[in-house]
Image 1 (cartoon, rainbow, N blue to C red):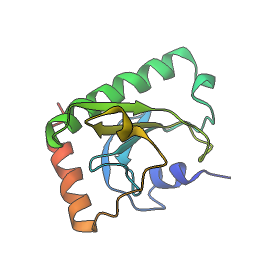
Image 2: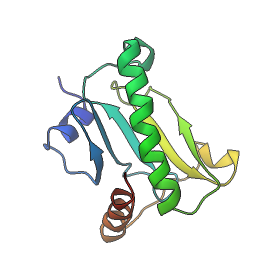
Image 3: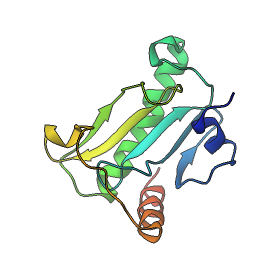
Image 4: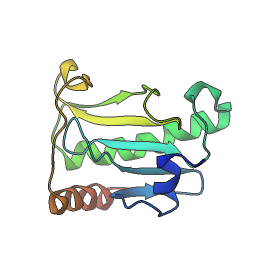
Length: 131
């Protein structure tokens, strides 16, 4: 059965897409820890990040790096935090989270509720900065 991320990649579930290529897909998290919180996934359904082959893992990180640079410009912050939890959805994914301190990457923190128009604006701002 396809994961929720595969359904997003296939267009069966709407998302605020940031970028995609033939192997990877990035979109805004709809329950973000911060404005600009992005999920980056391989299009290939692999449950555990360290089960990706070396080339796919390296490519995922390089793809994430491009997204992170754009987020950091679009959303003022000190850094882009990177987290891989891998428990809630059985599909490898990297969280890219704008942060100003280490506590900002605490998944126990309340999630933001951002209106759809603002989510679209954030996604558009990030997309515009991709080079």
